[in-house]
Each structure stands twice: as C-alpha cells, then as structure tokens.
Length: 302
Image 1 (cartoon, rainbow, N blue to C red):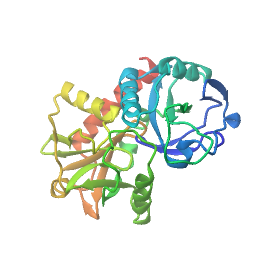
Image 2 (tube, rainbow, N blue to C red):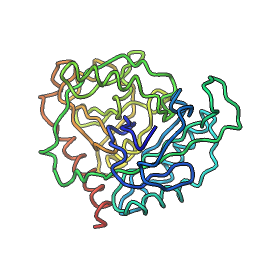
Image 3 (cartoon, rainbow, N blue to C red):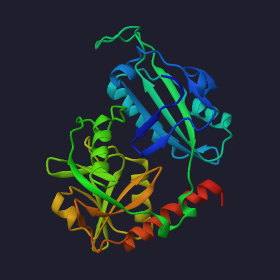
C-alpha cells in the first residue's frame, strides 16, 4: 500500500492523508514515501485494529479513553502492544502543525513475508498513523445540518463488534445498499434488536426521553456516544440504555446517529416511514447545540 488510503472508520467517512507527514513503523515521513509490504496481514486478511482520536488545539481529546479502547482491541486479537502511543501521536500532530486534527491509527499483526492463515508471536506489528483536519460544525448551526434517511439491514458482522477491527466489508456493503436505495445511512439489526449504524451509534427520543442501545459486544462503545450521555445527564435530559426493537424505532419521536466526525445527525425517515413529524426534533436541537458548543470551545480555547 502506498500513502494514506480512504478508510471507512467507526466514526464515519474520513479522508486520510490530507496532511503531509505520516507515521510508519518508527519513522515520520512524507505520505508519498510510506509503503507497506503486500504480505502484511492487515492487507491480506484485515488482521488489524484501528483508532481515531481527535486533537483539539494540539491536545488529544479523552486520550486515555481512546488508548484504553485501542488496548482492549489489541489484547482481544493478541497483537503485541509495546508502543508509547501518546508520544507517537503527539509528535505526529506537532509535525503536522498542531491545531484541530483527527488522527487515524492502525496496527496490523505485521508481515511474515508470505501468505499464511497461521502466525507466530515473532511477528512485529505494523504501526501506521496519519492526520486530517477536523471541521467545526458549530459554525454551521443546526439549521444547516442535512437530516438523513435510513434503511434497517440485518447485522451480518461478526460477534465482536466491541473490537475496533479494520474488517469493515459488511459496513461498506450495507452503506452501498443504502445508497442504491436513495438514502444515506444503514442501521444494523441483530436478533430483532437495533445495534448501531454503518459507522455510528444510534439514539432515539420518545416523549422527551433519550434512548440508546446497551453497551455489549454487538456495538462499539463510541467516545462521542459517551460524551452525548454525559451532556444529557448534566443538562437534565433523561436517558436510558435499553434494547431497541424495530417497532420502537419506527414509533420514536426522533432518531439520531452520532460519530466524532459528523457529530449528532437527525434521521427523519427509516425504511420509507417518517420518524415523528419528519422534521428535526426539539431534543436533537438541544443536544446538537450542547455538543457543538462543547466541541467549539475545545477547538478555539474559548
């Protein structure tokens, strides 16, 4: 692989490689010079995990939570973890001018110089990271946010969605299915329960109460998801983490999805049926303002 690819990450579509300097296996180098072996297991098998970490004013946001989630993924798939992640990522951000950047970090099991399903513990992981700019969605305001239409699809992913794996083919396929049907998002359903979106967490509102699926191995616990719940709690918005079935979804007054790159986006139609009155909801507007104000202050230092 050469340079930075376009990657569908857990927090939405993110164009990687917009900055000049990337990190690869101990080196900081121009993106055009970054090369990975064709025998790398990340390339051959998707044998890798990743993380996306926002830096505001050059400082990692909730860095420990992101590193904890990365370490969880690495332990779960038994990839060596011998890096000083804080130092690597901070240096990369500094070399790209600091400011408000999103850092994509990918760790593969490495290359054995051949294609083989089996591996041994002597492999050295391949570590790659690059940056892209973070958009200040506070500047646009709630009126400029384009609401989404979505479909519900069967969740064909593996049963360890809590591992932030780069094996995102099911996500890509359902999002393409949504596009083919003229909508913008796909929501996963497993065992008659909604789990999450193709690259986002799911929320709904009924009679002013905010609901989101329980944390489990069927979803990836998003850092943005946790922030939304914290802001809701702080500002008097009741919330519950519950199982959400299809009927509850369609009967909701509001439906949203969230990710670190898109923030909180309303969904006004699911499978051709309007959600509520088909407009952006009151609770969504309140949480959008709280979320974007929080983010804007981090980005500007004000």
